[in-house]
Image (cartoon, rainbow, N blue to C red; front, top):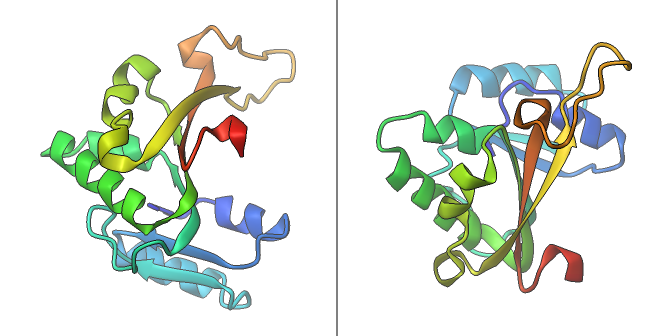
Length: 163
């Protein structure tokens, strides 16, 4: 969701995930990506807004949003739009699906949007990963909010640890 022109899809494809549906609100980005990956027909690219997904209920096993939540929170009507985004993702996830979010936002600023099990039917766990660095000598500390990305795992049908 919110694929942009990131290499994430290409990296996932190279790691063996051959069928990936990508969406982005920008027609320009979608057209560029369609052209860029025309030799990989199992990669699908569609212009779509994350607050109004044009997919049937229970379509996906996993939805990945890398910085999309952060972008939605920067826009006008952000609280309502995040609620629509999460509601739509919950709707299109299969009953045991996972919403995988990569964010700059600390848990104190993100969990209040995500921890609404009565609305979204998922449990949330939080993990951190060090931000990539140019120098191997400068590995950021997991305690430093500026040195990590936050990974929010929203799991339907149980916690992320349960599978």
